[in-house]
Length: 298
Image (cartoon, rainbow, N blue to C red; front, side):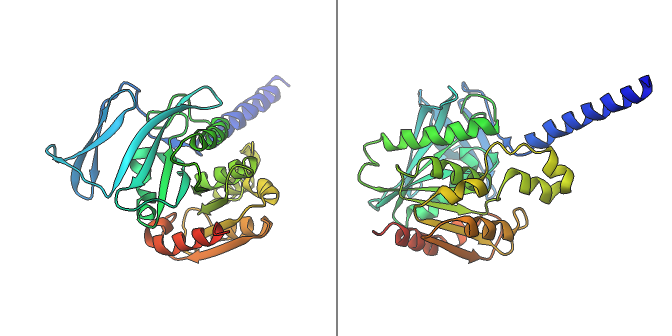
């Protein structure tokens, strides 16, 4: 009897540890101490050092230790407080030669930080948008631990901060999320639909349990905690909705994009594309921009 009890307890402990480990795989942040004043990346064969200046950690990009990198857009680094109590870092990206007609609130995927993920939106800047991108708790310079419950608070706080800015007032506001950020965006947009004008998701999964099952079968679905779900939230969303998903997506199955589209209300659009996971905003920037403006033209 004692041996059976030991085996049973060991089994439960193993499941608990497996569940914790499996849930942690949803978030893979790149983070660094808030006192950090620089980081170095290899970008297209060049060594680029990002220097963070002043209290707001304004980024300055230096290529090969000598040349300041010039962009067609400006970057304004800011900090705001999440409903979890964490100070979060966000970047407002604006085209230098175009007056933006609408604002995108961007939620990136499960890995990286602002430096590594903001590139996803830069081509849309030239199509008439300004973009506010954030790092979730535990990502980049944002405080706290990377946990899914914090992400939801972070997303809701980002909406409130963005709408408090003078340069956003009078412009349409669209939440755009990619991959894990698309799943998050679906829930945040539903929670805040009276404050925004449209939702765009790209390469998003339908629920935490669904993607758990995709990667680890029934056991994965059983071990994953749902917490919140795009598939459960979207039936309550009534604003214009665009789903973007690649038929060649090797990370998030194409059918999950269709599932999210099917549970959503009109007005809604499904944009089927080719190419890699969450590459649409880079490969089809003009087409996506036109579809977004169609969503919010009224």
